[in-house]
Length: 321
Image 1 (cartoon, rainbow, N blue to C red):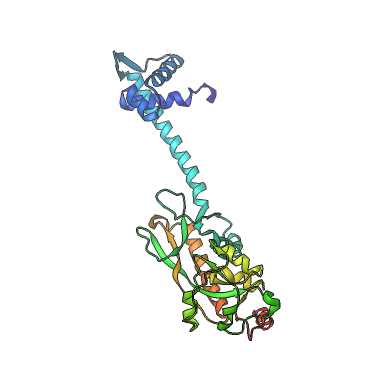
Image 2: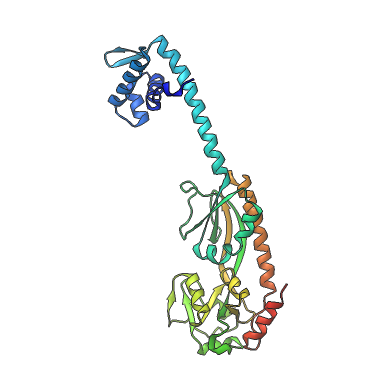
């Protein structure tokens, strides 16, 4: 068969729609074109085939017998083509795994670990969306979201992934390595601030109820920028465990004191109910929960600085298996 002899696809689509409706106007509405465009396509098709497909009676049209037969065959062919296209697109989408999360969590927690998922599941094409905007699964093409909040997410599957705590941290070279040996030593040191990490709950956990919330110095809007400022030796930051641990393991930050401040927020694994059992979501869910468990164990085994010196803590970190 010489496929070059086939009529134009647009003409066949116009004919199929007009044959279903037996109306050029309704076909035009369906295809988002003008009545004249549909009429022109069908007249061109009739001329190419040498067959009258529609009988015209003023503004009304009806299929001829040969037009009705051709319409059934064209419809079957277009349906088969549409189904084949759907399968091709679906197959590609089934391989894509789209995950949305906070920019800071993506950069500081997921990115150092994600190579293990890629190595374990090369059959999936992972796409990471780093955004501070809340995912709307009804609008956004997203499979999974890692949300940091209170867990009040209606209409979706939700599981607690990782709890959060805060603690003070600084560069091991801050003040030439002479770091504070007890919490009250912070009174005379530059404490960096952010909108999310407030010092008051940590002061209370450390028994420092008389310490006020710092009101001087740079206010950082982004938690990742706050962390970088601490790495650069600008002061002592109250940091999230999830964001800071990779830098502590690398020796770029040290954790001060074995005191955790509570966090009102938790990381949640969230996805539409309809996607939970898909292979790509199940694979990511299994992997990230295992990573979260290993992260908790790592934190439990990571010491804070001892006696105000960074060196002993760094030595213990290097000794961890």
